[in-house]
Every structure is written in C-alpha cells, then in structure tokens.
Amino acid sequence: MLVTRYPGSLHSAPRSLGTYGAITLEEARAKARAWLKLIGAGRDPKAEDARAAQDTLQAICEEYLDREGKKLRSAQWRRDVLARLVWPELGPQQISAIRRSDIVRLLDKIEDKNGPVMADRTLATIRKIMNWHATRSDEFRSPIVRGMARTKSKERARERTLTDDELRKIWGATDDDLFGPFVRFLLLTATRRNEAAQARHSEIAGTDWTIPGARYKTGTDHVVPLSQAAQAILAERQGDGIVFSIGDGKPISNFSAFKEALDEASGASGWTLHDLRRTARSLMSRAGVPSDHAERCLGHTMAGVRGTYDRHEYHDEKRRAFEDLAVLVERIVNGSQGDVVQWKGGDDVRADSSEAGCRRSGLGG
Image (tube, rainbow, N blue to C red; front, side):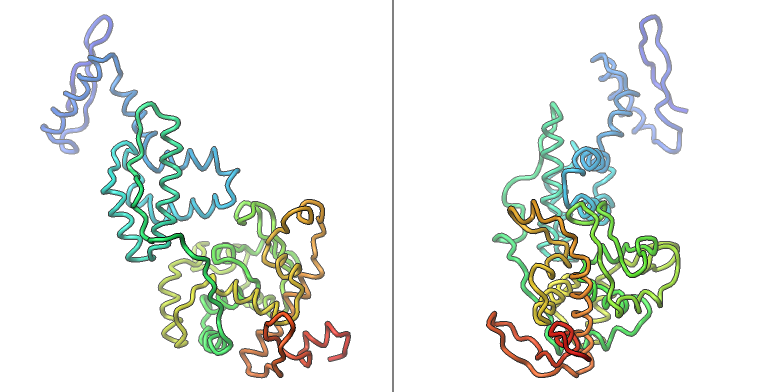
C-alpha cells in the first residue's frame, strides 16, 4: 500500500494513494505531489476525487437530461445518441479535460461511419450540454467554437420518398424473420425507427398500439390503430417483451448492417428508414386520405387555434387512414394498382376502383 501524509489539525495522518502494482511509484509520487498541493490550499484530496467523479462528461450529460429532459421533445433521442456515439469515446473523461481536438476526432469518426448530418446533430447536442454546464460552473469554458460543423449550410429537409418500383423490390426482399417484418411495420404504421424498435407487446391493446409519451417525440402518448396487415405482422411475433427483439430482451439495433444487406438483396439504395415514414404519408394522400387525418396518423399536432381547441382524437379516422394505406401498399407490391388519375391537387392517386376508394365512395367491394 502506498501512502502519503495528510496534515490534520492535531497530527499528520496517512492517506492511501493506491495499491502497489495497480499504480507505479512514479504515478504515486505525482499523485502525492498533487495531493500535497491541494492540502496546502486547504482542500481535501479525497473530497476532490469524489467531486471529479461527478464531473465526467457522462455524469454532466445525465444531470442535464435529468434536469432539462422534461422540457425537451427529443430528450430520449439525445440520450440514445449520447449513449451510442459519445459516451463510449469521451464519457469517462473529466469534462474540463476534454479538448477541442478530442471532439474533432469524435466528429471525424461519426462522419465517416454515420455521415456529416449525424456528426452535426451530435455536435449540437454536446454543445448544448457544455454551454449548460458553463452556466453552472465557475471555471468551465466550452472547447467548442464556430466552424466545427461538418455541413457547409443548414441541413435541408429531406424529401425522398420511395417509388412504386422501389417499394416492390424492398417488400420482396423483406422475407426474413426480423428486419423484414420491422421494415414492413415501419411503413404500415408510419412511425419512426426507434419508436418501432422499442415497441413492447404490453403497449398493444386489442388492435391499438399506444406509444408512450416518454419515448415519443411530442412527449405525449400516440395511439396507432393497427391495420389488418400490421396486425398480421405482430401475430407472427408472439411474446411479452420487445416485439422486434434480437434476443435477451434487447430491441433490434445495428440498423446500418441490416440496411446494407437489404439494399444488396433488393437492388434499391439511396433511401433511409425514415423515408418510409415520409413515403407512408405520401401514399395516404395518394389514397385520398384527408390531410388532417394523415397528419394525425403521423402524430403531428395542428397549429394555431385549431391545435389549441380541437382535442378530438380522430381514432376512427386514423383507423380508416391506416387501412387505406395498407390496401394501397398491398396493391403496389403485388402489381395490381388500378388506373392512375390526376386530381386537382396535382398528386397521382389510384382510381376509386381500389378497395380504399370504394369504401370512401360508399360502394361495395
């Protein structure tokens, strides 16, 4: 055991520096010098060590999320990004010891693996937390400066939707027992990747799936009335835990690898899982679903006075919309799409010879 003397008010007391073998003599001498410097300033080294343990980047991030998370619609997304991309690299480091170059190397790694947009989003999250910590610290100054972003201009809203041909190719290649059903479920429910990945059987009651507000972007519960096609997917995934599980109660992950394999198998590329949500919204319009109902299906709130006073849940309308979506998807992937007509809004929609169109027109079939 390596020790140094800790002067007390009445006598000097030994303090352990560490166990020989776990710490070298040179490291012990350096630590002893640092401790004696603290003692000379009237500060207890043990208390300083305890304080340092509370000032790691991960500890500061968790404190920020605990205090500010309820105010953030994207709190769970930020926590996921930090846990997946930041904490494994910089989490154990003292926040005050993190240099600009450390962050640059982290962003390089994220850009190479996940793209420049994800690098910038991660940078924005770290910047927010470090600025927050700076307002609560007498000494900390954020190492982040302007010019560290990886995209030259503000990220443009992505507009990609899948074509009918791409949908047929992808659907035809999603016949495995995990990622395939997951991709189909994403399209049929118009949900986000992580919302579906973390879906639990306990969230499904009858034919409704309720995504709890704790992990939904708006912070409020979102009810998804499941179409018969979506229910059929769930019927093949019996259990009492995570619906799309890789085993041991863990949700599906490693999306990049799964997606790469699907691209190769389908011959469709240049799309993202989030494009399925945008495609579902586009298909709803094409199927003649009223815009208000489609927006409710995606969990979007109405702006202005309507959003304030119109609290109708639109459950029945959403159910019809999801069924219409499923009918159109089925027609597309099986090649029986009906005739195309041009509506005044400029969108191509299928003629009302479709089952969805017959229901809306009050016709049989």
